[in-house]
Length: 149
Image 1: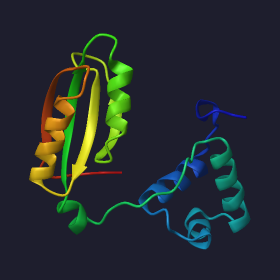
Image 2 (image 1 turned 45 degrees about the vertical axis):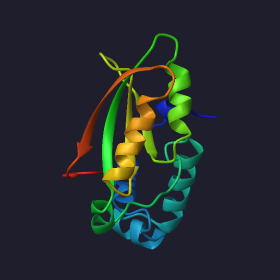
Image 3 (image 1 turned 30 degrees about the horizontal axis):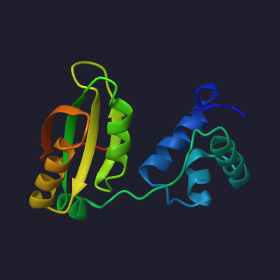
């Protein structure tokens, strides 16, 4: 089995991925027309990209109006020595944590949070600060998203 780093993407693959990232609900016929190739080639390319784990799944992007009603924040987290894995596991159990990124520098982790309001965001940030193994946190509330791909 190939791993994603070994995938050989040609220009058509890259354009296909761009189209899917813009709107993963496009029909095979729409994708074929946009790329100027047959529907059979689209099916084959998608199967290969999935098999090679370049495409891991298809998801929903929230509409601007709904997304604007959500409170989002990035929490930079400094863990105590030897607690990195435990902190990541504890964060992963919190359903409001949308992503966890290991980073270099002064902090060890960035957690991306999403809640339905400022009160629940505040409670979540407090809960994260109380997790065992966290030395300190710095939170930035996202005021507006200018670009998201």
